[in-house]
Amino acid sequence: MSAFYCVAYTDHIEILTDGAFYHPDGTLITTLEKVWRSPCLPVAIVGRGSCELQAFAETVLDADNASVDTVFDRAAALAARLNEIERTEQFEAVVAGISETHGPLMIYFNTYQAYPQFDPFKPYVVGPVFGGGSVPAAEDIIGLDIAYGLAVCGVQLFEAMRKVPGPNPTRPDFPDVYGIGGHVDLTVIDAEGAKTTRLHTWPEDVVGQKIMPGGVLREAA
Image (cartoon, rainbow, N blue to C red; front, side, top):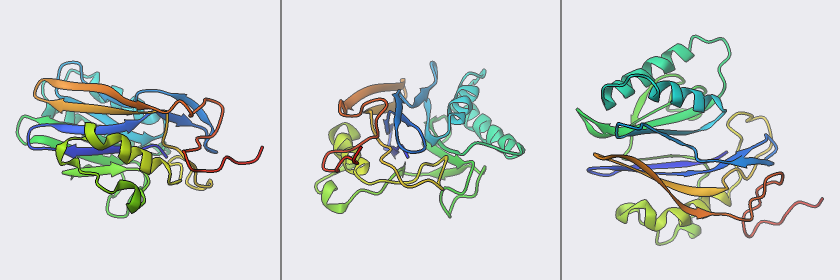
């Protein structure tokens, strides 16, 4: 399942991501940072789904991009080309950056019908708040306020989200899994660039085992 949560403020963008990579049955494979940042421009790419997301992000960001607007254009063009491939792996992505013409901007696209309102392979402007992942229980996010930044409330939000199982984006035919885990990263994109810091790590998420959030009974062996 994994998760991302993006907020465009007036002069910057903040993004939360988890770090879990797992088998279709929910068994944790490894934990890694799941945000791709431009080394010279205030733009980053996040998402969830297959490993093809990484190839997409690296292809877009490794090009000779003269501006953030160029990155947005290149991402849209690559999404269109992916539509021409007979069999594309399932993933969804958000390209977020400080546009030279529009300020903080977030563009979303997917390679499958992840949500009924978004056609595959078509870029959409989203925000100011947009996320992917399970919907947390209302009682678990009481008092949560994004107005003061995600560094304050990000761990609470992802703790709540990870308690709700959901489908694996790459294998929706499989039973729902607990797929948010490993750690919570916060990426801040402003005029100076994109920087990622670690907010929290879940030491109970062990490679080779299924993610079992606090309060969830572990399956019998």
